[in-house]
Image (cartoon, rainbow, N blue to C red; front, side, top):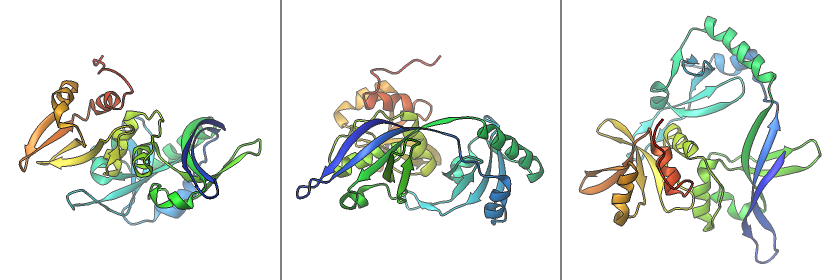
Length: 275
């Protein structure tokens, strides 16, 4: 376990107690979910499907989850993808447009065992953000999807207690606390989080945010909070506009959205040409 960065979130005026955001690099053996355990907890759930990714060849059990509400009030079904080493929530519409394909249980089981065995042999490296210290004054400003308190310990006996803050939530946390959290976030993570979770993602260090939008039956990535006087510049980066209900709205092409966001957040100075 290595502490990479430490950012002060808040200092109590009376006691001097502090809240910090730590960025930790963790080296660990992945926790493996056995096929038997997965079947006992999810295999009998109504609507469960057995999936294999046509690109990565990984497998996942897809279990219907709690739906979320879109910006326009539409109800968006969500599914939990349960995999040998992790799980994630994803909108059903996004899942259906991805490389995940349904297979039968007979094919699924040996693939799960093989993936679990391969994972047990490797060492993984993961970077996380954890809010620690005096959390009560900032509790309601931390991500609502990550409310559990975690204790993370290393072999040397050092431990950290706090709440996990995903990279995609750093921009929103920064805005809520009125501070600058200067952590280098991968734009691809921001785009994927917005699309998979169907929600707003603030762009760190800016007043802008990206939203997944449905316009005329087409799924788009919308940029909100942009400066109207810079509209030509946004277009030069690859953005495009459309007037909807007498209002100019700015969208980013999904295939180049991460590159454009890298420029907007100062991560890079220019758009790289496709190879």
